[in-house]
Amino acid sequence: MQKTIFVLLLFFSIFSCQNKVDTKISKNDFNGKTFSFIFEKQENEVIIDFNDSTYQTLIGDRWKFDIPWRVKHHENLTFLVLENRVSTIKKTDATNFSLLHIGENDIPFKMSERRSKWNKKDIYGTWIEEVYIGKDSTDFPPLPPPPPGISKIKTWPPNYTISEDKILYKHFGATETEIKITNNAEFISVDFIDSNLYNYKKMLWNIKFLSDSIMIIDRDLIERYDASRYTIDGFREGKITLIKID
Figure 1: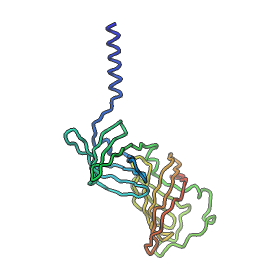
Figure 2 (figure 1 turned 120 degrees about the horizontal axis):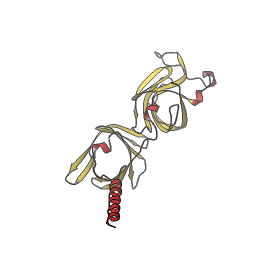
Figure 3 (figure 1 turned 45 degrees about the horizontal axis):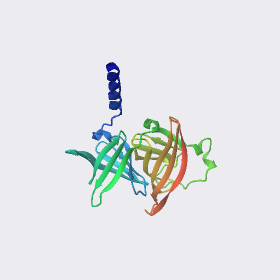
Figure 4 (figure 1 turned 30 degrees about the vertical axis):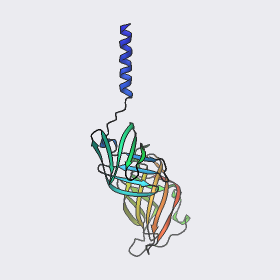
């Protein structure tokens, strides 16, 4: 009888330890991870992507980059400091947190980790849009000629070569620009000058599916400027399938 009680106590002790949430919070809980911020009243989705000492945020389709953050401990309280915004924070489980923003009006909200669904390294490589597969350039309406100083040698099909922090677009000549890829490989922010259309583009790629050979994205043209720097409203281009060729 005593042996049976001992075994039961040992079992429940082990089970309890396995299911206990470690409530301690450190920088490692956020660094290199992507989170959703969830408010009671929320018009746009808020996504925070944490790096070592800075973070980038996506609110709706608007990015902000390289904003400082840190975790601060004081007595029995833990604070998450995002630039000049301070919130108390508690861990509710391994991937979720409860926070209270301290300000003129205290605002409760939650953080939930957006875990990666695929391998980020599969993004790297050279991609062409599926619409160009097996097609000749004459199958599409002609684009305006490139501006002076831009090579008239046209690459067909147009393609994107993506590395860890850059994208190279080849069509008329080559246009390379820096990009931001979220830690969970869900979003890519792209800003580049499209010499074919004489304008600057700010785009957001939302990756819906990724393998080592196929990437499906929702591509938003957030805003663009023509040669006179006139702002043209953005629009959603919709779902686009890319095929990896290298």
